[in-house]
Image 1 (cartoon, rainbow, N blue to C red):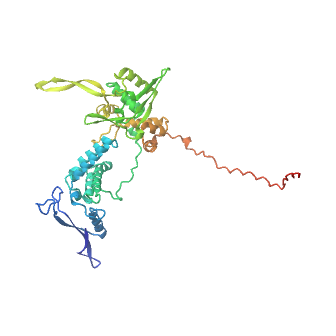
Image 2: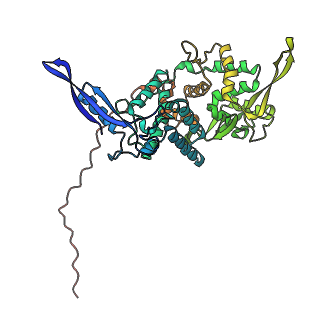
Image 3: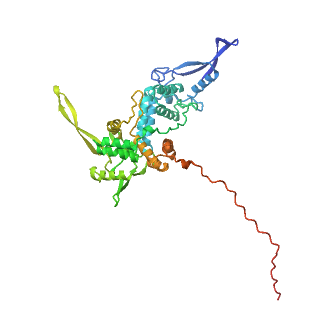
Length: 468
């Protein structure tokens, strides 16, 4: 147990000595790796060495808070935590925690991308600092210093939370297994992050129809298929993973007798590349599974694309848009050096489009060629321009400005709620001044109740029965 001791100093105030408050406690002595040192080297599982520690505070409240923090390392029932559990390394609990996530992934309750991201964050931030330390030796002060260190790295607020949360969740597991009495990484109520209000989408991050046409035309000079794909994304709004997850069978087009076309796209899957291999997964949320109608002109273009351009347009399982495959030749130059020169660019119709690679190698150049700034986080100062995802924003804003109701646009985007759509795009909804005129009818007086009928004083007599 920690104790608080009053210490009189040589300083005086109002003729009386100034009192400081010293918090005293004992804790296991640990080595450089945070492991407790046995009192007898010949008995490593026996009694451990302890060291006496003290800290001085100017106020009693500060000393009391520190005393509570130290005692929080013990069991909530005021029982001393088993030393064998507290001596286990943080890295052991981290491995066990990730293993539980993998089991949840196998059961289908977690996505692989989510588990991979948590494991990557642990390996990058928490494990280098705490991996070889005994979990019982991690104090609340050290947890706060760890969080402060993340902030000092220049990470954004959301990135700091993403890096800190797996560290906190691993310590939650240590609490559940009685290795520590209290999680030292629990945020206090005073520093708890407030609910973030999402700012409306800036108007500069969407493209006008003429800009979409210009970018598509620029790309079509070399890649007509990708020029059409830009128009497809800007007028149906799939996310990057959803675009990669589209197959030929997900597009339904009808050719009408009058020469017009109509169609829609069924978005129900997404693909991401993991360790060089494509993996399929469910969409972002339950509402992300949706059917989006295509404009008639786009349906016509897609009809001829599938029937005349796509070599596997009759195979429902073929990727809708192909990946890029670069061919080259090895040429021998001066001095016997061999270099590769690209001579042709082919399309791999067996592989789905990789939106990230497409953006970096093709779309960025087309944006710049048409005077459109692209996002560059490495620039000084960083440039916040147009990204691949802004083609999806373009679809949403174009639909709203065309008069489509926000409820329908929200369904086409696959948002979880209408509130998300309004939060991001409310300022793009056209406002008709006449619709803002208050035309509510004036209150009318209630109709008078009908007067009750006057009571009659006439009594009806029954005829007498004749006696026999």
